[in-house]
Structure formats: structure tokens, C-alpha cells
Image 1 (cartoon, rainbow, N blue to C red):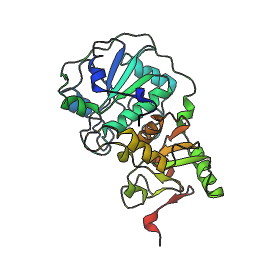
Image 2: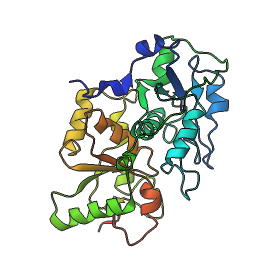
Image 3: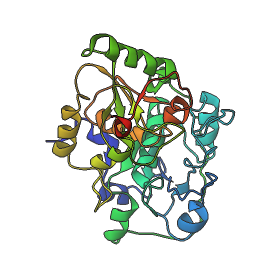
Image 4: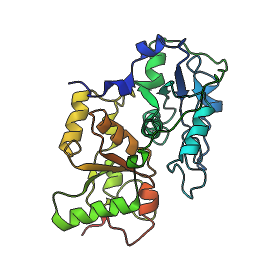
Length: 307
């Protein structure tokens, strides 16, 4: 089996042949976050070793690029003007092909794959022609492909013009509540399928919680983002394995899908996986459990507390 949208991923061989292409922009979104959501990856990872010509693109800081600078919570969906400014700073114009790359310096919040999908999810829905390097910098380095510590130059380009329709990529608390109420009302065909992308122990309330309440949003199914990424290679799992995970959870049916996690980062891995099979009625809950868990009126299920 192959992905329906293989163009959303590029191989190391393809990228190696494009390093001199002025219309291809390689953006390094590696994360190494502190407890204050400051990203140390530029100083501690990128400056020492990066793909020649690539530019550091700090998506992961709490108020990094592609995040709403005025929002109370970190990593909230950016405005069109914020996207234009972020892209201009790295020379992305209307004709630019963006390739997102990252390494994983530490497991968990610094997972390179999920910061690539977070950047892809936002940029793709604003109309950027973008793809993710399959296997990330780990595969690139393992294959002995070129790396450098030399600085890269930001090229001049025409301003990027955001596409319309980006609103469908993000879900709000009201959207999620409607989905929950639909599940409660008829028990089967709900307005949307809710998908929790966090690890199974978080889903069942025994692991890390992402707010004052543990467990998961009532009615959600669990497709941990790590189940879609090969732990040994950091690449996305093969299409047939991914397809099985998604079908078993009901994500490739005709129903709308809303993914969530702790802060709308890991949720984009699940959303990207669904997009690889050309399903477009998918949204990511922007504030995720950072918002949901703080309101005791919003339904949550904690299996570990049952009985």
C-alpha cells in the first residue's frame, strides 16, 4: 500500500538533489524546550550541524513563529498577518517549495516529527507548498549526507499571499463540545470523531496529565502519535501499518475528525497521517487539553478513577 498523498513527504535522495534549487527552502524546526517553553535548539543543535542552506524556524517556542502572539495560551493558531511575517523572515514566497526537517534531541515534547507536522499543518492550510523530510535529520545523517555549521543566507522573495479557507483546519472548544454531545445523544454517528493523540497511559488517566483533570475528553478514541512513528528510525510508519491504525480507530470513514492532545502539537501527527490518505475533513483542536481541562463543566472520562 502507498500513501494517497505521497507528495506530503520527500525522501533524503530527493532533497539532496535540490540543495542548489533557489525555489526550495529547507526549514529546520528542531525543538529543545525548557520548562518555560523557550527553545534552545538553535544554539545547541542547529548552529553545530544543519543541512547546507537550511534556516532555523522556531515553531516550538511558546510564542514562536506560526503562533498567535496575543493569545493567552502557547502555540495558538496564528493570524494571516503573522504567517506572512514568519514566512518573509525565512524567504518563503508564493513560488517557494518548503521542506520541513528536524531531529529529536530528546523524546517527548522535543519529538522532531510532531514539530514538523505542526508546522506543516499550519503552513499547508495557509496555502504553502510544503512537505516533510521522511526520516528527518536522523536519516539524513545516517546516510552520510552533507551537514554544515556555516550560516545560511535568507534569500529575497516576493511576499507570500495566504490562501483562504484555513479556518477549517482548526477546531474550537465549541466544535469539540458539539462532537461530545453528538456522541452522548445517539451513541454512534456523531458530528465528528474525536481522537486523542496522547500516549495510552495519559488517555486512561494514569500517566501525564495536561491540566488540572486527568483522562480524556468523553467519547474520544485513542491513536497515540507514537504509534504512527517508527521508534527506531524516527520516520513515519509504512503506509499499510498507518492505514490499519487509522481504519481501526474509524478515522478514515466519512465522518469529520477532530484531533487533540495536550497543546495541539502531537495532535497534528494524527491529523497529518489522515491527510496522507487524502482525507480533508480534519481539524485540530487548537487549545486542546490546556483549555478543556480547566473547565469542570466540560465532560472528561478518567478510566483510572472508575470504581
